[in-house]
Amino acid sequence: MTISKIDPNFKYEVAAEPGGEEIKYCFACGTCTAACPVRAIDERYNPRKIIRMILLGLRERVLDADFIWLCSTCYSCEERCPQGVSFAEIITAVKNIAAREGKLHPAYVTQLELLKKFGRLYELEEFDNKKRAKMGLPELKTTCDEVGKLLGDQ
Amino acid sequence: MENKYALFLGCTIPLRGRHYEKSAVEVARLFGAELEPQQDFACCGFPIKSATREGTLLLAARNLAVAEEAGLEVLALCASCASVLAEAAEELADDGLLKKVNEKLAKVGRKVERPPRVRHFARWLYDEVGPEGIKEKVVAPLGDFRFAVHYGCHYLKPSWAFHDVEDPEAPHSIGDLLRATGAEVVDYAEYKKCCGGALLGIDEELSLRIAGEKLTRVKAAAPDAVVLVCPFCAVMYDDNQGKVAAQLEEELGVPVLFLPQVLGLALGLSVKDVQLKLAKNKCEKLIAAFAQEK
Image (cartoon, rainbow over all chains, first blue to last red):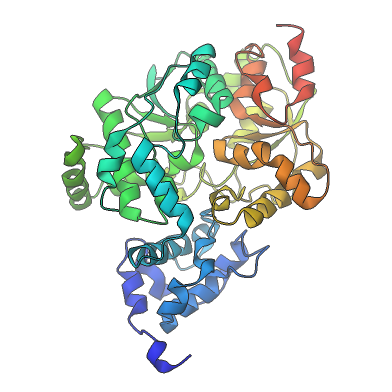
């Protein structure tokens, strides 16, 4: 790692994202990491290490890493942090920055496309509505174009 | 108790959680409440938070606007929908943010004036009916049954979005409701842990390992079923239990139920009313106990 690869402003960039504000309060106690159900079984994902990487300005290495997509969004880290830092929100902020730089994980590219098309993650077909009706459940609209309009530029 | 609520189904339930929906609607009806899906509800926004937090807020706000137009409070069956809608309702208390969001919502002719109250169905049941209210109406006590509760994550977290109504470090509400039927609620290790569902589309192998850890613990406690309050936890524990077992190279055989299915049977609903047979990993013991009577 050469000094030219370090971006000392990365922490401010993350802090400027909604949800990223508190990153500078982290004192690296590692409670988030101890609480993390993903870290418990997969060493690739290490919240404390990711925070340190952000604070040290390792911008490219963080934004290019596969591990940033491994948060299960359980919020255990946020609930247990003694400093009121939400790592769940910080990693979301990081992923949002990566997305804006064209590095969005392909799974989310697909999900965005599905939502724009159907308004839901899964296509609801007439077949499903028939099953619903049989069960005494109301039929539902199969699409919602408002979602596509709202996400048009995302 | 208000009589009518906007029932938020989200993406998963209309296709893969109809037994959850049906049993919840029937249980609510027993207590004089009507749960009405809104035709204009769509995705809650949760699935794309990693891609765009702003997009998530817009989708959530749009759904809140739909409920507000109908003049109804929101009850969600999916825990992730409940949490993201509750978060949005809290965030939109900020007038500056509300104004910005409304500018975007205007594109689709929607507006949030004052976000409606959002609760998870199980929270509503606990608040408005409570274990005592359930107990009074039990007609088929479940004293012969033992259940493991999986609270999941977003029924309680982030706790600020739910006004810290229950400590996520010591959850009890679902267990309290189940015990009101006479059933035993079993303790098991790691009972608060995540199902891994949010990672299914990102890293299936990892996501199944997270689910496997939990299902192994549940199996060790040997309950008659694990009881859920989220359709995506069911995608992991029921729909994908076969894959999890294959990964673990061991038999699991853990029956999976949703809370209102269990409560409904105890309250006199039929096997059909609660769609007991729709799960992949059926609770044969409950089916056997109730099938012949109805």
